[in-house]
Length: 303
Image (cartoon, rainbow, N blue to C red):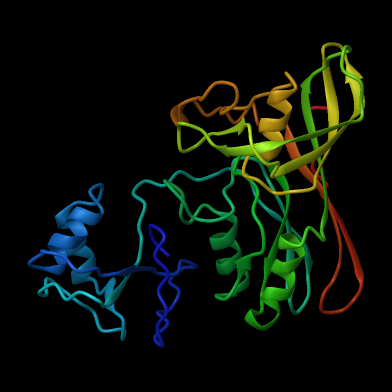
């Protein structure tokens, strides 16, 4: 899936080194060649890079035939294998907590993305697991931010995947997070924060706005140390950056947050100061076995 385009095809290109191909549907347009289209569609990828990929057989037709600088043909699909030059190694490892025939649960470290995006491809939980376990059909059932540590669930079997995904869409998973943020003695806990969250002016950021509620979080205090506290956060809904935005709205920005209240450039990333947010526990009834599952992260925050 690329730029919102979903490709359905009888041909399924193979995974390479844990990385599946991206798919692009070719719209009607004036491009003389496929190369011209790709150069315009992906301006950050040079024409010479596309030619190198084609020469290696890394650009395929919807039937799996390697393509080169052929004339542009609309209403077809192509697959290509994405690359990231000089991808940095993330010096932290995921921990496999649970595996059965259908499900994998991982305890993710801070800084490691769940899935490929931006400048991260091989250094993601998904690609690492595919290579480590040899599971090309592995798919995350839900996600947490790269900055957040803790529990992530993956589906192994396409046949049972919808049942596990429905747990999250139907709010049938009890999720518990912990966070470190400023202590405010003037607030009375527990608090339920309810608001509407939507994208802010910058694509990376979210904000609270007026309108129908789409985000609910139950917040309580676990421990106070000086001017900081460790909070328990139980999201009912799953809006992007919901916990970070809700805590910010209470005047409690999470410690070492590189997005809220101030957006920090990527190059200023500091491994010594991870975001103090941890996906601590997941509880649900397994839709396949009927067993109640309870998973807990072994990771901890600064206190």
